[in-house]
Image (cartoon, rainbow, N blue to C red):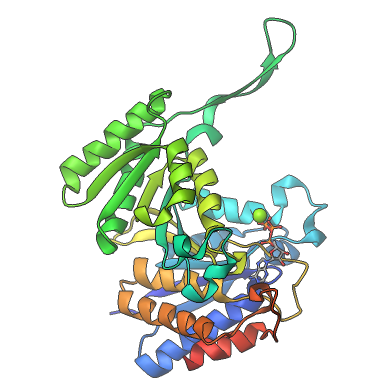
Length: 364
Ligand code: ATP
Ligand code: MG
């Protein structure tokens, strides 16, 4: 059987720096465990613009469609701020998401014990936290028509956005959440505002329908999204998988992210429809951006990108054991007190470099 294929798009800024550590880890899996991938690399963002004059070449797009998974670093940087919107680095990422039709955005919020002090909340509230927010990414109020700023009847203006969800759009993201729950703790909480929004009523009914007809073994609860925001901050460990729409997911996932500390720690996945092999189309990337302020200095924390690769192992390659092994290595290194600069507390100490963190994780 052919090796699973992985397309690496390191991108700009600290993207290539953190990706270098992932490549070493991929090499380690090949050398020490006989787990090998067909890895190919290509350009995205400013790096692609510099060579091709566009932030994502058609040939790269085609390779992304064929790969079992895509792993992306980061795009953008001050050098590209002057470019026309149509060729801005971010457009490369948007094109990937749109053409691969990645409708389910997975944002884990996991708190490593060694970093519990970094949370804005009390340690007992976040220690051991491990939840996953599934945000619908391609529809809802950010895309619904009509939208625009129009003349109003009173001679002033009116701004309009439309929250719109079809049955199928809700059902497919619900399925992503239930699939995920089966690989975790079999529990989903769906969040909307069915008390005041028609789309919220449909959301609740369709998520319930998918549950009753396809995933009756998974525990399902419903919560109004405003209460959900409150509960996330009050006692986040009551949740496991949360599924919600594009707008609420945008807000709730940022909120959940800050339960756990540094931006340099947070991975993400965006999943689409199942491919012929049964696995979803998938793009994995750290939540952080290209961090131009520290690019080229060897200061970047590679853990978000490394944990994104761990998500790829689990969700695209069915390698849950290998993913857990990699996550345990990260946990061990943090428990040992190894810290990149972004993870230094007020007590200070000597930070390790990007590759120093990679060394420690490989050793663990
Ligand atoms: P984007 O618009 O691409 O999301 P941004 O401006 O919102 O980018 P980042 O590029 O993520 O944000 O950077 C925000 C801050 O976090 C910067 O000060 C950056 O140095 C820091 N930062 C981001 N990622 C990392 C990382 N992996 N390691 C250390 N610091 C990081
Ligand atoms: Mg940002």
